[in-house]
Amino acid sequence: MVTSTAAAHKTPQQQTRVLIVGNYCHDVLMQKDTVKAESLGGAASFISNVVNGMSVSCNLVSKVGEDFKYPVDFTPIVIPTSKTTVFHAYFDLAIHGNCHQDRVLKRVSACDPIRPSDLPDARSKFGMAVGVGGEILPETLERMIETCDAVFVDIQALIRVFDSVDGTVKLVKLEETEFYSLLPRIEVLKASSEEAVFMDVEEVRKWCCVVVTNGKEGCKVYWKDGELGIPPFLANQKDPTGAGDSFLGGFVAGLVQGLAVPDAALLGNLFGSLTVEQIGLPKFDSRLLQRVKDEVQRRKMQFLHCERSEYELEFLKPDGHEQFHASLGAAKSTPPFSIQARPWTPSNSPKETEQTPIPHYTAQAKLLANSVYEEPIQTVEGKP
Ligand SMILES: Nc1ncnc2c1ncn2[C@@H]1O[C@H](COP(=O)(O)OP(=O)(O)OP(=O)(O)O)[C@@H](O)[C@H]1O
Ligand SMILES: O[C@H]1[C@H](O)[C@@H](O)[C@H](O)[C@@H](O)[C@H]1O
Image (tube, rainbow, N blue to C red):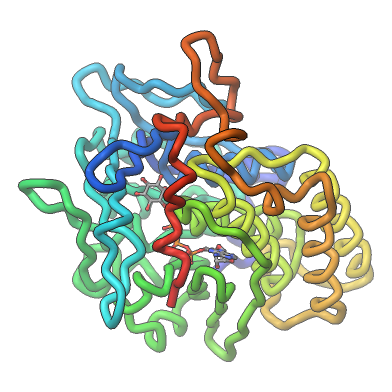
């Protein structure tokens, strides 16, 4: 757990606020065995998109091959002998019922793991271990724990294994992994409801805060002495990819700026809901971002009088939490920010041409068929 002594080595000004560790990847969305869209992927890309959008300073460590094809804000380490990690997501193979799965994921190629020596020596305030393809090693997580005041971990970085023949992603129990003994030294473990069944939440919450996201239902925060459900925001889901990543980006951006855990989780829910409304890496409207930043600022001002260590998480729901939810919801739904009212049809969907440049972070989801929205990827809408 973070204590004020853990941060004693450097003043906050000398620290990178957020260190994001995880490989960028190429995401390919499949439907009926045809490629429907291609996009920059990897939790690191979704998270940095949100953290940057919220104007929180961050640094990112990621590895790719020479075939990496997207412009990004943080230059990755290029490994000449390795290929970029590639995932194929099959939404039509999704399994519903008891063993709910919103998509079947296949890791088609895997870049090198990130090693402790790849991490910066300088301390960071928040470290985020957010691998997607098995690139976070136990020793890498341990090094992050040593050099960051608080470490946030996405369980997908810890419990994924990959079929040796076709790369299908399977999950193993957290307690069977080498990461298990490190849990008492991390601050927050985030899991989706599908992943949460691979850990004993009642056991893990004794050591660190556990956040379980649950699609359109929002999320639930568990800590040693309590738990709290955090309400969602309405969304018109087109592609669930990266919702959990954007959630984590919003959650950490909120905490960095001094919000209490329940308020930061609302910010997470907001960015999760904005992400499912777009295919691939979302582009956030700059006016919407400004409104969200203004709301966060206003919220912070309400608590200036509270005596709280910068490094302590505040779990209890602060007064005015519901009002904060309403204000963020209003920011999201106020025209012209909302994109949910605009139905995509073949006639208004963007047409790709040879001349169309792919601007930085704006059109990184490359639609390969104009009809992609005729069969919206909405078979996945009903999350548990
Ligand atoms: N259909 C939706 N409507 C509103 N909010 C949503 C929806 N889907 C996701 N969210 C928001 O995003 C958060 C994360 O979503 P989810 O639980 O689906 O994550 P995930 O399964 O980890 O996603 P991924 O693995 O694709 O990144 C949710 O807690 C919720 O706040
Ligand atoms: O880009 C996506 C995204 O980061 C998802 O959260 C992850 O589950 C996938 O593996 C990845 O391809």
